[in-house]
Amino acid sequence: MGSTSEIVHEFLPHFRAYKDGRIERYFGLDKSPASITSPNGVSSKDVAIISETGVSARIFIPSTINQAQKLPLLVYFHGGVFVVGSPFCSTYHNFVTSLVATANVAVVSVDYRLAPEHSFPAPYEDSWAALNWVASHRNGQGREAWLNDHADFGRVFMAGDSAGGNIVHNMMSQAGLKDLFGEKLSGICLIHPYFARKDGGVLDEFWRLVCPSGLDYSWINPAVDSRLSSLWCTRVLVCVAEEDHLRDRGVFYYETLKNSGWAGEMEIFETEGEKHVFHLFNPNCERALALVQKLASFLNEDHKGALRDEKTSKGFESKE
Image (tube, rainbow, N blue to C red; front, side, top):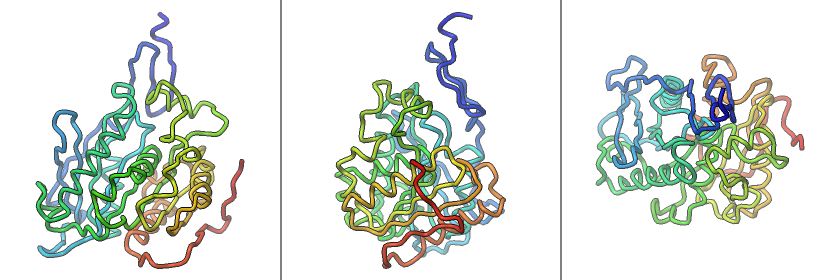
């Protein structure tokens, strides 16, 4: 076997990357069809956002929505360490469908370019372009009728899991967000977010597929992000899982934000006894359903309230 066939990154059963730049993906390759007449009570359609780069999205709304009804709008960014995943694959299609059915919201699930074929900062550029496209519907004059007719731009949220949680943070830190949406976004949710480990290690090696120059970027380490205290939203929910290898990264983000001087409401929610993004791969288990219900409550509850920590029976604590 030649040196170019050497495996440099392996994250089974999701992908394997080789020294010569090849990557074998095993997750997110299937495509669930969008459907206007889905039996699960949720309609979906695919839209092209930027044809030159291939940025696109899948939009979801409840099938029972009436013509004049406005719903909270969630912009969702999938995970997959910036290397795998798609809003069109069955895993993410089914998750977002479940969330829409439970929360009664409209969702734009964004498809961004993946590493290593598209390196830093392509995922962020694509996600920012998608947000600009979403915001172009703010006055009811965008290209997509579902957003013009049914999105309540006074109740806009962003959420994402793993790498998608990282994207959510970085989109919230953009100075131009105020100009896009006017008033502050209602909230963001980071589900098992992917950030840098303080001590390096194999997880940080995955980041080098996206950003070969290394880790000295505010994109991946919120502790050095000077934008943290100015997040343009009123509420933040961080979800972690007890057995997740990234659990402490989520707790670290929560604690760093809390100490940054940011003035909004913060909440942390821990699922005990579960691993990273367990809800995607075991969606019908009791704890996955509880997580979806938590997200639904966050998207619908009154955003006025006291700063609080929410935790399951075992609670949470930093393990570093």
